[in-house]
View 1 (cartoon, one colour):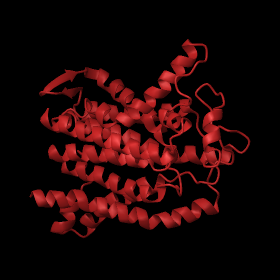
View 2 (view 1 turned 135 degrees about the vertical axis):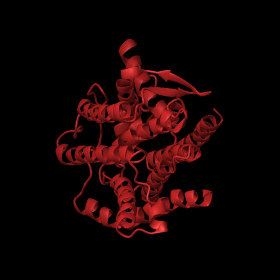
View 3 (view 1 turned 90 degrees about the vertical axis):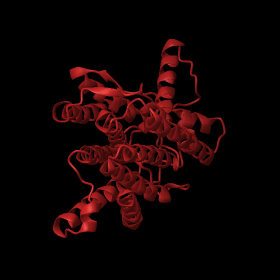
Length: 358
């Protein structure tokens, strides 16, 4: 039985990786043929002010490198999941039925958030590409994107509360913190916080390695909890991210951009909650540990904004988020990426250990 579960978990990951590698040349041709990149380099900060240090570092990278690379991730994962389900439904056999992991109680929700977030992100990327010809900023505003994220998360939070009877989070040692109806806004708050870490995208290979590590960690936790379908889902995501990463290692063929980060961050939150009370664990308590790269990314931005407001414009970092600060002080992009990977793996392992022994 354990061997069968291992095959069920790992085979879809290999399939999504192969599919992602296969579709990338077609996607790349389309993106370059239609010049799906920003027409003007640069960005602005949360206040709308220019970011000269960032712009000087990335002025040659943002123009000429397509966005929308995240399509590789969510498309290959979704096709793999639905493909296995279709085969098991129309051509049922012991193998096909066993491999099917599209289940109402474990994978419907994360698949929904992956696709929903990815499609909204795709719209944002398209508007960014087509709408910034004369402006640095383009696409949906941060406020609009947050509204979308909160809307999706409130729907999912209500599903957890009303359909799955989840009204609290697990604590180490088998305890529970009861929230009642406040679980719904709490779910939305956690999701928005994780989404804020999506700004980790911006250096070749960085976001891909970080997200692959986090989903792999939750796959291990889900497998330990005997949520085999959820574990298979997480590793399918990992496989598709690795396909993306194959082409995103410097020099990047494309950027993940919003169509990748929005779907992945919202889905990561759902997976964390799925491995909480529903799995008899405490996936939310371990989330800040497993997702420490996202936490530090968000914190660095918050610290920078607070410092500028409270200290008359004085900054803590040369540029925020912190990974761009490291570039600004002289670290080459590949060094930032590799050290983030190492850091993320160490804390992901720590999070899995705590989830298992707790």
